[in-house]
Length: 244
Ligand code: 13P
Image: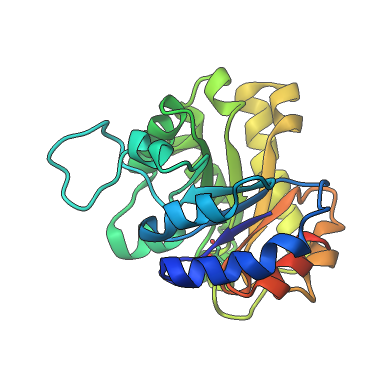
């Protein structure tokens, strides 16, 4: 159960969140819990989560180890801040910052090389959904991105299916729509990396997940977890999603 805070929360706001959130998930041992704050609040999140099962993740990661890459943050830096995960290829990165399937693959490999768990995002846009091109899009994203990993690398990633039209819009994919998309992705995983790897890969759903729809989404056997944006900013709401 992962929260993507996007560009919200200062370190002080992060501390305030954890004060309330920590006791609410103290006994939640059924899942991994990851909070992905902005880089500047990563250290605060790591410190506030100390002694709990809550982990912190970055929202992006550079493909290079170091160098002249203004504005980028490397895997080693993210690790040094105490994070364990990194979101890669979020649709907002693709839409506003020129992320492509090729750079997503490079960033995924960089995360793995630095010992982080990448949460690799895929998903179709509204016009692709309406043009009945969802399946083709997911296959294309898989083939051009994730399929470039080795089997050992693939075993260490998490995939997030986030239909772009459902992000921040209040429109959630129906549990059946999400499950269909997850089956396509899992089918690709099986074909490329083998049956076992296809079964084992964890696929999260993201896009307008709220406390009142998380239970029906999680009831789908195909959905292994959720990647939550807006609703993860509220400690009570996100705790109720975690404890679906
Ligand atoms: P919302 O939950 O705000 O729709 O955002 C989803 C998302 O983009 C998570 O990465």
